[in-house]
Length: 467
Image 1 (spheres, helix red, strand yellow):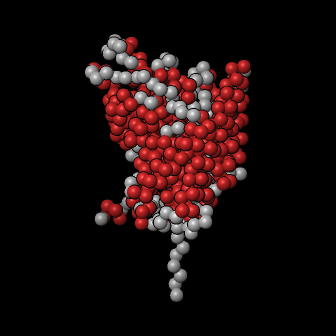
Image 2 (cartoon, helix red, strand yellow):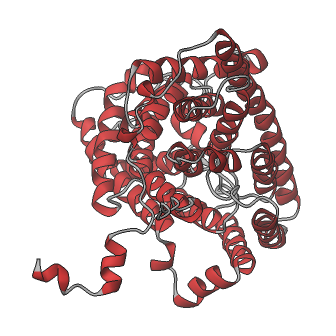
Image 3 (cartoon, helix red, strand yellow):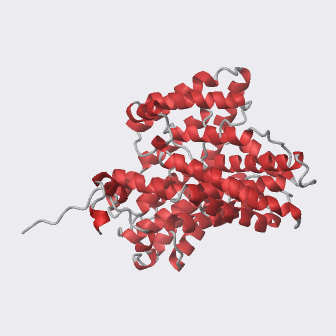
């Protein structure tokens, strides 16, 4: 007790945040929801289908933006040194002045909204205006070559759609609103990667942090309906195609703990930098980020252009083609791909533009697996080691290290590659990656950023009047 009294005031302030962040267990949706009305079922289904259709259009727009940037960069290799700094600076300026709340991934905003007790705050956070800003500014980021993903923005957009349409005609309740947000997250991930099972698992494991009958039904229906809309537009397809990778049981399985631990530590360090960037930036850059955010974004854009030039253009955008080629065994990634992609994703996110980290993290993980497998083969330690299988294992280990949601990591890698033969190997790597990551980043990245966002926007509870 005496030691506590002697603590410095600033240390006590750090130990106890001024704005409490409610634990998910205190918001059990089952006890707060109204019974499912017919009108609610109809509007819920319409909202989930709309999320899928928006995601389909968003994906088409992103493909166009990536292709446009790639054509311009191929014709004029010097162009990114102008386009990236100017583009990222402009996006940050517009985000901060026109669409505040649209910056970053979007998943922390949805998680913060899930725990806000004031419905009006949630409506401001998950509004149509924010959804429009998120969509348009993320497209602009891809047009500038930023190493970002579409899944975080689609989650925030999906939560906005579910929040605004799913409760039309129904009395507002806290439980209903939270259920719609969780379902919107499931629909967002499902339609971003055409992976409905991964969307449902993500919503339960990462957002709701608990399972009950109401949550399970809601997220599964939302994920399947948004996936149905995507199926109607694109047909039956898997995000990375159908992999034939397999890792026969034997000495080759020694790469699983290696990929899990190395990927987990790298992912954990990445997350820790995102959570508290000022701790890792040089003082002048930290001052620039705090006082001149647009100039800092431009410096991040310049770093992105340099990393893109060093990689021969491989680390621009989400690096989907590189990751797909690695897990299908059609592309041999250079040893430098993983560290350069890691750095490109870091500077893109730290710049403050909207964009997710799922897809770039999957690409980094594939690069980690490809790098480790090539090192093992060059040293003649495990002859005949399948590079594509190790790329999948590295993808799961690193991605689990970033998000610290091993079940989501395992399901999303297996579902996106249509390769159930790798389920056990991928699951083990994801579990080890998540465990290793906690040594570097004790609090999961989305949880930590949601706490920061909640503390920044949550209104303090009014104090009771004295009579």
